[in-house]
Amino acid sequence: MAYPRSQLVSDEEPGFYHCVSRCVRRAFLCGIDQQSGKDFEHRRQWIESRIFKLADSFAVSVYAYAAMLSHTNVVLRSDPQAPWQWSDRKVAERWMAVFPGSISNHDSPAQATTATSQ
Image 1 (tube, one colour):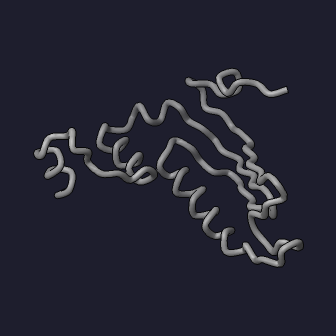
Image 2 (tube, helix red, strand yellow):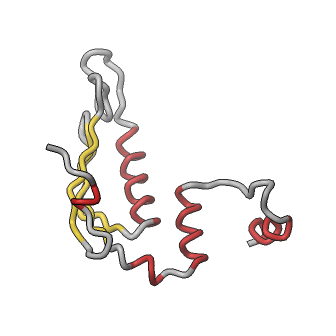
């Protein structure tokens, strides 16, 4: 039976989590697909890079990971108190590293100039 994340993950206490993400409909994540013969091995390095980029941007440590043929496994440690020690600028830099965007037209020109010059 599935439980809501709010019942599994504490907002206040650090914790270790084993996370699994699976492909559906016989899709292949890495390796050679026996049905089609296509090689998806190039994805393995991309997945590894992405896992560490995300961990670096959020208050998460990666303890183990595996990119399998049809799924990934990641063992993480979450520290929900760590971001409270970060400056506003550090929070924004970490967020923008994962979700790059641009200054919207609703922002002031002074903010756009400051953001692009730094």
